[in-house]
Length: 460
Image (cartoon, rainbow, N blue to C red):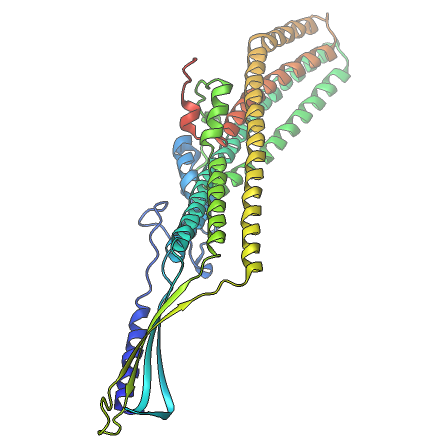
């Protein structure tokens, strides 16, 4: 090549290097504070859960813990990054393909009438059929919206699971307190039996049965205590940080439950505002755009180009000797692969029908889950009222009467033990019913946003 070819080659190299540009930095996640670690650290930089410092405690209150779980949970952060990935896809599929810049040099110069051709510089830009890029962008936007709604659904799931773990942990604390009181009660029964045995009014068997009953109750208390660690570990997993100062779980309270709207209103809101159903609706829109995109494959794409061929000096006697040549080109794609296009149409149609079927199935499933949670909620509060207002007061009165009768020799020891067991069962059943109501409300939190659950219907 001559000096002109070398200059053109250097120019193309500089242009290619400049087009690379600096690598953009990822945007900071709004889910994390400015001083927090990156949302997705490199694998070798990922912090160990066991090495992280305690940063939450039940004494912080349920509200702040729920907020942290909904924003900082690794499950939600993963869904957030999936949304960001889908969102970044929109600009990629809706942009024109990058143009091509080519440089050609002849190994042997081609002699023409005006002189030898030394090299050629070409430019080519592909242009999809009008509407293809817009449709591809709409499809990617619908997929990104589905990912965003899946992140909202992930928040509801984390909220639901954290509330369930929180409820169970408080119930365990209450059950421990009730069982410990029962151990003290059995100790009192053992003392009463021992005094009566010393006065030869009862047999030694009564004392032994009281001791056996107390040991059995102490074992139940130890079993309850063994359930504390797994529940606290589950809450740590939801928050993504280790547990700090535990404090006194017996002072913790369940989430306040507002008066729920009527079932018909909740069903309507579920079908209209459920993030899971809305995500499926977005996927349906994406499948519709995929069908339109497959239909547009019937139309050809274009390519526009320009070429500059520089010519060396030839016979100076010829007109235009050494004058460079310019050319403009237009290329049209021939969509002859009809089988490929038909296959893309069938695929898009099948995906559309698949999401429609999935949406219908999830609608019925979520309505069934809503009805189950409402029924469990109502049944739990019915049991709470039954135990607190009727069964438990009568059981305690029966126990007091039986204890007095046993001390006077008018009742058998087994009758007194049975009466004590009934009191324990009713106290535990009351706490269990209160926890079941809270668990049902937690399930409702996994179906609908809390703002809707707190709203009052016009009928109330």
